[in-house]
Length: 253
Image (tube, rainbow, N blue to C red; front, side):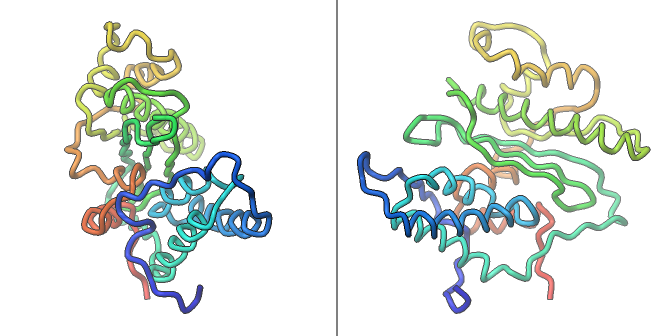
């Protein structure tokens, strides 16, 4: 792949991989190659490249029975990395930027099981320090519910950050969590039971306690300005380039 043509984004805009046909024969050599590529990409995703998190976790779902199309798209991610190998996460301690979290979800985005995609990241000193992109464990009945589930998952990471930095001697104030759904923010900030939310799993209401304990505070951010969108779907080039710097990813010679 060293001489391959670079790609502008990790995956083509709007691309959604599909599972192999049921009963299709599995090529052991292709599967081994695919799993090797995906394993290497997961290492990069967890370490320093939040910009490929959605693409890699989505393609990793097909590691058990990949086809040629899946392998081609995994190598497409490699083509993106070739063109951005000099990009690093940059932290600026003198910037005065504290901890902030952004969260988003893509409702019912998986056509096979209609589960939503959760994406969130925490940012400190201008650079991302923690990020997650994964499919939700249950089906959300509305976009508000999907966003609420994403907010709750993000709040657990915020609590862990309080614990970690507290052990290092830092007493943090409420960490802001930014989301782009007014309904989910209302449910998180107002512990009331309504007919549209009474079925939500108990564990997702954990964010209410986090807000009540003033460990986090939830704020609204317009959807077109929410950088966590990059962790929930394949964005077009314009949006992708708009949000990538928000993670602290900058070109370094």
